[in-house]
Image (cartoon, rainbow, N blue to C red):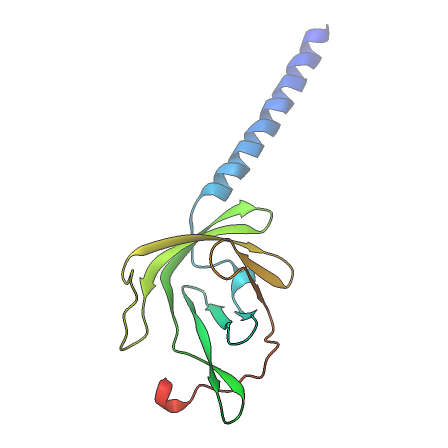
Length: 153
């Protein structure tokens, strides 16, 4: 008489494990574009002139350092480079693996131009942590910013 309950319990346990495996498999798959939560401009508020930005759109990232306009003592974005044709994996707990094809701004060429690059980041409430490179980016710049001068675009 105990056998039917044991089989029902075993079946329920098996379905639970199968659902867990399916969820893990879905998380490990690559998705096109960038996660909606990342689509924003993020700022590295470093000390001195060590200030940078990265902007995520639906399909690409663009970033670089800031330049300083000596006359106004304000910072402006230098022409950006980054990754296009982005895709991502959700690794859990706000961690993502992003991958895309490296591109350069017009008139320049970065070392790995045209090659696929992959990196890992962790998204927290108002902070983006890069596992390599600049450690943390926030949603707001803590320094005075101006538009990029027309001759640098």
